[in-house]
Image (cartoon, rainbow, N blue to C red; front, side):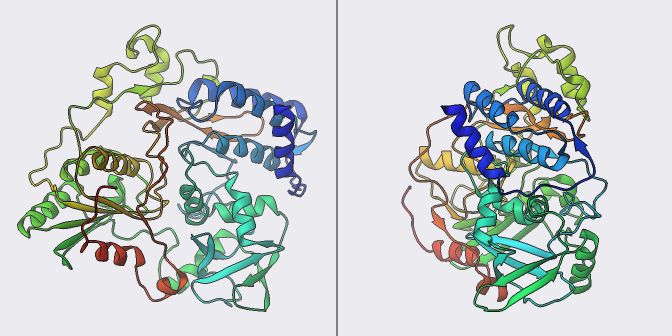
Length: 501
């Protein structure tokens, strides 16, 4: 009965997908062989595979999906099935990608250079699909116009349909919607779900007019964006910023990333920035610090732990545990781009595991993998914190948010979270990230990426009330005026004394 229900649900998702007319197709046997490698690689290479789905349910879901395979299927339709399964595992660091013949830029990397896509830079805020920039040839829409429908589907229907294909941590949804707009997965999935279109009908909120827009290649979209803005769609801004002397003796710190290379592109040094910033915070006798982690997708070099030292929220006595998925590997012949660390483990698991019956890494290797824990903060800040988050606050940012949330739960410190729910699952405690176990399927050339390491021990008890404490969304009206509703709300909150939530 359970298998039948799953199969009906899965077919229900795909019954709305037109036949994808592509020249390259897969036989039923090729699909089954690729799927067997896909499933086997997940079981030996994904450290958190069974965190949010048990083994029996995983097997039934796999059986149901395999039952939908048909002879002479397109690679795209096979890919959508794999993507559906990956998303159901509920790990944001997992992914599946089609063979790509090149891309225009970093943010649009998922888009094929020769295919046609929606000619907009989009933003999803509070379940509204907003045109952030009209990059069409027609140039009919102002910035921050709200898309009511595309084709014969409302924007909300399209978003809900696409969420089933978007990986994210645990029960969170915000990282899914963030990725749909920020990394053009909305455009990508629309092309796969509704292929072979040269144009599409558009409706805008508060307008009775139906518009017809030509779909464009990614290069054309980026070129139009550049002509209007003098920069590429993928160009980032300064990632670190500090403002003192805000109302109520408050200060604002923007930490836009934990990626060293991205920070240094702007001539900034992370450690020096933090040292100077917190020295000034101490000198100014600042009472409230607003830390902006919106769109901070994470990074490395232990930058999250260094920040926690300055925020007086890092407990150096705490020991982190790291687990791996397996100690026997049958599918390494299909792996690509594996790091030397993972190669070393695969060659000699007993050297790294605590004992013969364990999948936990020895403590001495854990200490080498957890960077930033020995950082020294000369001027740690112990006062009130207001943390700004959204769906892009992910990965290493989740580590910071989780540590501050835990500190609030166990002490009387005032820590307030404002904005949208962050992209990562802070309640699961365990996180699966870092170096991966990438696999390329031989017949379809589809690539599967999965996290090889999991940090911490899984918690399955979720609180009744989830963060943020104060939900605040940007609106088309505020965006068009250049206002920041989330920061404005944080400044107002800095005047209040909030009890421990």
